[in-house]
Length: 167
Ligand SMILES: Nc1nc2c(c(=O)[nH]1)N[C@H]1C(S)=C(S)[C@@H](COP(=O)(O)O)O[C@H]1N2
Ligand SMILES: [Mo]
Image 1 (cartoon, helix red, strand yellow):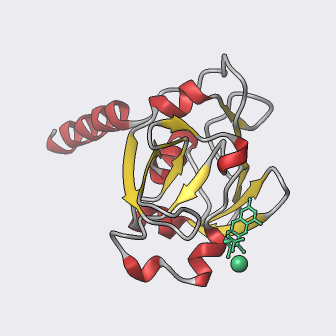
Image 2 (cartoon, protein in one colour):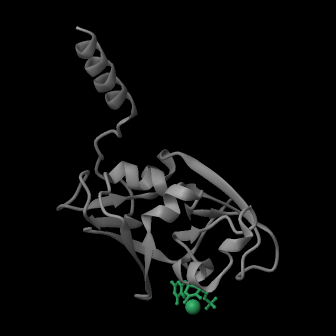
Protein backbone atom coordinates (compact mmCIF):
# COMPACT_ATOMS: atom_id res chain seq x y z
CA UNK A 1 0.00 0.00 0.00
CA UNK A 2 2.64 2.43 1.14
CA UNK A 3 4.72 1.90 -1.99
CA UNK A 4 1.65 2.52 -4.15
CA UNK A 5 1.13 5.84 -2.42
CA UNK A 6 4.77 6.71 -2.88
CA UNK A 7 4.52 5.81 -6.57
CA UNK A 8 1.40 7.96 -6.92
CA UNK A 9 3.08 10.88 -5.20
CA UNK A 10 6.12 10.55 -7.44
CA UNK A 11 3.91 10.44 -10.53
CA UNK A 12 2.03 13.55 -9.41
CA UNK A 13 5.27 15.37 -8.68
CA UNK A 14 6.62 14.43 -12.09
CA UNK A 15 3.43 15.60 -13.77
CA UNK A 16 3.54 18.89 -11.88
CA UNK A 17 7.20 19.58 -12.59
CA UNK A 18 7.49 18.15 -16.07
CA UNK A 19 7.50 20.51 -18.97
CA UNK A 20 4.44 21.20 -21.05
CA UNK A 21 4.49 19.60 -24.46
CA UNK A 22 6.25 22.01 -26.76
CA UNK A 23 3.79 24.06 -28.78
CA UNK A 24 4.75 25.10 -32.28
CA UNK A 25 6.26 28.60 -32.48
CA UNK A 26 3.99 31.44 -33.60
CA UNK A 27 6.71 33.97 -34.34
CA UNK A 28 10.05 33.96 -36.07
CA UNK A 29 12.20 31.01 -35.00
CA UNK A 30 15.29 32.28 -33.19
CA UNK A 31 16.65 28.98 -31.96
CA UNK A 32 16.48 25.37 -33.07
CA UNK A 33 17.57 22.53 -30.82
CA UNK A 34 18.28 19.13 -32.33
CA UNK A 35 19.93 15.87 -31.35
CA UNK A 36 19.37 13.91 -28.15
CA UNK A 37 16.10 15.52 -27.05
CA UNK A 38 12.73 14.03 -26.16
CA UNK A 39 10.50 17.11 -26.70
CA UNK A 40 10.08 18.35 -30.25
CA UNK A 41 7.66 20.54 -32.18
CA UNK A 42 8.99 20.42 -35.76
CA UNK A 43 10.57 17.56 -37.70
CA UNK A 44 12.36 16.01 -34.74
CA UNK A 45 13.67 19.41 -33.60
CA UNK A 46 12.58 21.94 -31.02
CA UNK A 47 11.95 25.38 -32.50
CA UNK A 48 11.72 28.44 -30.27
CA UNK A 49 10.45 31.93 -30.98
CA UNK A 50 11.06 34.81 -28.56
CA UNK A 51 7.77 34.31 -26.75
CA UNK A 52 8.60 30.66 -26.03
CA UNK A 53 12.05 31.59 -24.76
CA UNK A 54 10.54 34.23 -22.50
CA UNK A 55 7.97 31.78 -21.14
CA UNK A 56 10.83 29.76 -19.61
CA UNK A 57 12.13 30.66 -16.13
CA UNK A 58 14.25 33.78 -16.59
CA UNK A 59 17.38 34.94 -14.86
CA UNK A 60 19.19 38.27 -14.70
CA UNK A 61 22.98 38.32 -14.72
CA UNK A 62 24.69 41.60 -13.90
CA UNK A 63 28.31 41.39 -14.89
CA UNK A 64 31.22 42.93 -16.70
CA UNK A 65 32.34 41.04 -19.82
CA UNK A 66 35.33 41.19 -22.15
CA UNK A 67 32.98 42.62 -24.82
CA UNK A 68 31.49 45.60 -23.01
CA UNK A 69 33.03 48.66 -21.41
CA UNK A 70 30.54 48.81 -18.54
CA UNK A 71 28.74 46.40 -16.22
CA UNK A 72 25.75 45.02 -18.10
CA UNK A 73 22.43 43.44 -17.14
CA UNK A 74 21.61 40.40 -19.24
CA UNK A 75 18.32 38.54 -19.08
CA UNK A 76 17.13 35.36 -20.68
CA UNK A 77 16.19 31.77 -19.96
CA UNK A 78 18.45 29.72 -17.74
CA UNK A 79 20.37 27.17 -19.77
CA UNK A 80 19.29 24.33 -17.50
CA UNK A 81 15.62 25.28 -17.98
CA UNK A 82 16.01 25.34 -21.74
CA UNK A 83 17.54 21.86 -21.60
CA UNK A 84 14.71 20.64 -19.37
CA UNK A 85 12.14 22.06 -21.79
CA UNK A 86 13.49 19.92 -24.63
CA UNK A 87 14.26 16.85 -22.52
CA UNK A 88 17.97 17.01 -23.32
CA UNK A 89 19.66 13.69 -22.69
CA UNK A 90 23.29 14.25 -23.68
CA UNK A 91 26.13 15.72 -21.64
CA UNK A 92 27.52 18.04 -24.31
CA UNK A 93 26.07 20.73 -26.52
CA UNK A 94 27.35 21.97 -29.84
CA UNK A 95 26.32 25.61 -29.92
CA UNK A 96 26.42 27.23 -33.36
CA UNK A 97 26.28 30.89 -34.32
CA UNK A 98 25.00 32.70 -37.39
CA UNK A 99 28.61 33.06 -38.58
CA UNK A 100 29.06 29.27 -38.24
CA UNK A 101 31.34 29.65 -35.24
CA UNK A 102 30.58 26.76 -32.92
CA UNK A 103 31.72 25.58 -29.52
CA UNK A 104 31.18 22.53 -27.37
CA UNK A 105 29.53 23.48 -24.08
CA UNK A 106 29.34 20.89 -21.28
CA UNK A 107 25.87 20.47 -19.77
CA UNK A 108 27.62 20.52 -16.38
CA UNK A 109 28.34 24.23 -16.90
CA UNK A 110 24.60 24.89 -17.16
CA UNK A 111 23.76 22.68 -14.20
CA UNK A 112 26.51 24.08 -11.99
CA UNK A 113 26.16 27.79 -12.79
CA UNK A 114 23.39 30.20 -13.68
CA UNK A 115 24.34 30.30 -17.35
CA UNK A 116 21.74 32.09 -19.45
CA UNK A 117 20.92 32.35 -23.10
CA UNK A 118 20.54 36.10 -23.02
CA UNK A 119 17.84 37.66 -25.18
CA UNK A 120 18.12 41.14 -23.63
CA UNK A 121 20.89 43.48 -22.52
CA UNK A 122 20.05 46.43 -20.26
CA UNK A 123 16.38 45.74 -21.00
CA UNK A 124 16.72 45.87 -24.79
CA UNK A 125 16.52 43.03 -27.27
CA UNK A 126 19.94 41.87 -28.36
CA UNK A 127 20.14 42.62 -32.06
CA UNK A 128 22.43 40.64 -34.32
CA UNK A 129 24.79 43.64 -34.41
CA UNK A 130 25.16 43.50 -30.63
CA UNK A 131 25.66 39.75 -30.29
CA UNK A 132 22.01 38.73 -30.59
CA UNK A 133 19.60 37.12 -30.98
CA UNK A 134 21.04 34.85 -28.25
CA UNK A 135 24.29 35.14 -26.32
CA UNK A 136 25.49 32.56 -23.78
CA UNK A 137 26.37 34.54 -20.67
CA UNK A 138 28.31 32.97 -17.82
CA UNK A 139 28.10 34.76 -14.44
CA UNK A 140 31.64 36.14 -14.60
CA UNK A 141 31.36 38.67 -11.78
CA UNK A 142 29.70 36.17 -9.45
CA UNK A 143 32.37 33.51 -10.24
CA UNK A 144 35.51 35.35 -11.38
CA UNK A 145 37.42 32.11 -12.06
CA UNK A 146 35.08 31.61 -15.05
CA UNK A 147 36.88 34.42 -16.83
CA UNK A 148 39.33 32.17 -18.66
CA UNK A 149 40.00 31.31 -22.28
CA UNK A 150 38.15 27.98 -22.14
CA UNK A 151 34.94 29.60 -20.92
CA UNK A 152 35.36 32.51 -23.31
CA UNK A 153 35.41 30.09 -26.24
CA UNK A 154 32.07 28.75 -24.93
CA UNK A 155 30.62 32.27 -24.75
CA UNK A 156 28.99 32.01 -28.16
CA UNK A 157 27.04 34.99 -29.44
CA UNK A 158 24.59 35.18 -32.36
CA UNK A 159 23.45 31.68 -31.45
CA UNK A 160 20.83 30.08 -33.65
CA UNK A 161 21.31 26.35 -33.18
CA UNK A 162 22.10 23.92 -30.38
CA UNK A 163 22.74 20.25 -30.98
CA UNK A 164 22.50 18.02 -27.93
CA UNK A 165 25.22 15.47 -28.60
CA UNK A 166 24.43 11.83 -27.97
CA UNK A 167 26.59 10.47 -25.13
N1 LIG B 1 29.46 33.92 -32.70
C1 LIG B 1 30.71 33.87 -32.24
N2 LIG B 1 30.92 33.69 -30.91
C2 LIG B 1 32.19 33.63 -30.44
C3 LIG B 1 33.29 33.70 -31.29
C4 LIG B 1 33.03 33.89 -32.68
O1 LIG B 1 33.93 33.98 -33.51
N3 LIG B 1 31.73 33.97 -33.12
N4 LIG B 1 34.58 33.58 -30.75
C5 LIG B 1 34.70 32.88 -29.45
C6 LIG B 1 36.04 32.89 -28.88
S1 LIG B 1 37.20 31.83 -29.53
C7 LIG B 1 36.35 33.66 -27.81
S2 LIG B 1 37.85 33.58 -27.03
C8 LIG B 1 35.39 34.63 -27.32
C9 LIG B 1 35.99 36.00 -27.34
O2 LIG B 1 36.17 36.38 -28.68
P1 LIG B 1 36.84 37.79 -29.02
O3 LIG B 1 38.22 37.73 -28.44
O4 LIG B 1 36.82 37.84 -30.51
O5 LIG B 1 36.01 38.84 -28.39
O6 LIG B 1 34.16 34.62 -28.04
C10 LIG B 1 33.68 33.39 -28.49
N5 LIG B 1 32.37 33.49 -29.08
MO1 LIG C 1 39.14 32.27 -28.39
